[in-house]
Length: 454
Ligand code: NAD
Ligand code: UGA
Image 1 (cartoon, rainbow, N blue to C red):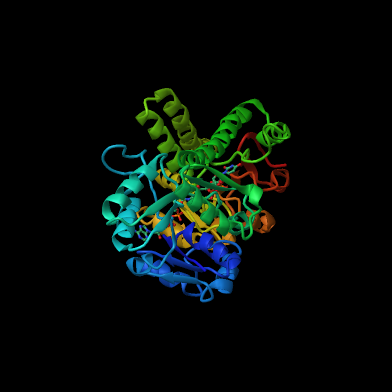
Image 2 (image 1 turned 120 degrees about the vertical axis):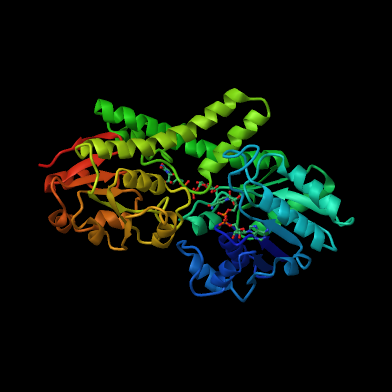
């Protein structure tokens, strides 16, 4: 029996440890966080994050072999393996501001671990970190531990929000990077043995520490790059009469390209894509590779452009003024299946709409609390969980998150309550556009010419 500790009870730490606890009943799994409120929520019936299937797993294992504590220091020395999944946001100050990763939470955690340990530990990098961070962590640990031995292992997380439990239960691969030394190999095997409880051995991929760290940044950069690529194509489709859904299907059937991450929309969001690409670009620059840096930077710039382009289309279509017009925004989460709004395209788009002096009414099935916080400084924005209520009296509906339930609404009822012309701007290409146009809506899609009523 081992005690596995995870420092950081966020979107990664909570679900990951719950799944480890489920599959490793002989191990004791503890999750700690400096945010006592968050820990209280993990110990309550209302978990701090919404994720399909998460509540069931937590209820199965909490109190059995999964425990949440807010006493971080008190739990450190009892652990054999310490996963660290604290946040690594983009730096907002000083050298590298707006691009480099802010490693202050990681460094603080490393110092805390060193201070509290009296016996050897494996420290696992679960957060997404710049390549060669392990070197810095090792220096902090070895200089502050009074001779206690540490082995640092990289085990980046690839789960996506909204499908976190499925991704953890059936990962494409689990990546574990370590030093090519006897102690390093032993540590990698100890971490691999945890996952081997439920992940087939051939999916446990072991590499060097640096490859593991860089593979995580590269995976996110490549996924985001595909989204920016198809969004760049979507603009050309709108000009030429091609349809981006058809183009994506056609290219995605090429086995070398594949169908995933080719959905054009209002741009990618979420806490990681932008931050990780900016970090990758910064690292390239730092290592004297300005051309590679500019290449990755452009993925982010195209994404920003896609959000602005969406609002510009709304303004132009609605007779060049949104002032005083009620706009129903359906969906605020950065993707369906989550309450997370971090870096959601809806934040930028709603702010741009408010700048146009539109009267914005935001609706979302899960993310309203976060939406209120994100828009707190913008006057005149209203919120409702009911999409019908949002659309009543509106000049336009803008779909910004592809929640499937929006496709099943009673559009006859919605049309009846709207101003004319009744515009729909489907930023997720979710709705049945031909049917809506047939009913009398003016339908604007991403990556295809608009459909007029009739
Ligand atoms: P999060 O903000 O949801 O959670 C991080 C938690 O760490 C917070 O609750 C915070 O209070 C806690 N924390 C910070 N400093 C601490 C300290 N010194 N001691 C104890 N707790 C501390 O972040 P997240 O979304 O879980 O992401 C964590 C890391 O995982 C990031 O590096 C991110 O890039 C990476 N990642 C995230 C996802 C995702 O889907 N969100 C997926 C893969 C990887
Ligand atoms: C992403 C990666 O998919 C995970 O592997 C990774 O672990 C995680 O980032 C991370 O490091 O945080 P996530 O951000 O949760 O996961 O969600 P995605 O499904 O990747 O979607 C990201 C954004 O891209 C969303 O805003 C989504 O709407 C958008 N997207 C995705 C598109 O616009 N088009 C697509 O075809 C796919």
